[in-house]
Length: 153
Image 1 (cartoon, rainbow, N blue to C red):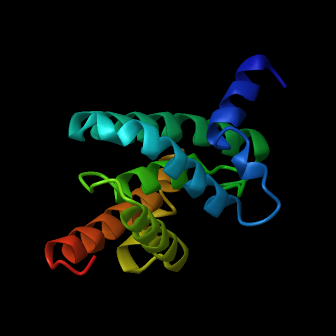
Image 2 (cartoon, helix red, strand yellow):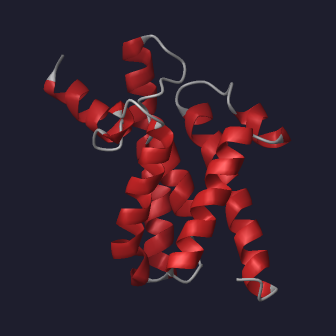
């Protein structure tokens, strides 16, 4: 395996969290929360930069890794969960409660994959890997924003 392939694998696997023997996607989401605690106080522009940058990086590296492994959506690729979890918290104040609710909502939508989320999976070349988790992150964000707006959190 070349040095570049190793770099792609490290990034696609969420710095190795995707190699977790139990629930690699959940472990990848936990990595995202750790990053958010440091990065998200930078404000909305910083949050959006992180989401967009992670998304496009994820399309590239997940495509490379999935092609190398011969698997359309390998479970060790968790950069999609990282990006989706980031999106779940965009424009949401950082607090333990908000992080926990965003985590639960994102994992619920990512695992359940309601209607339009599931339809994004078959899109080829890394796009489907990333887009279904971005849709799950968007749904989680919308529900979380509604809960905050209604003073339910």
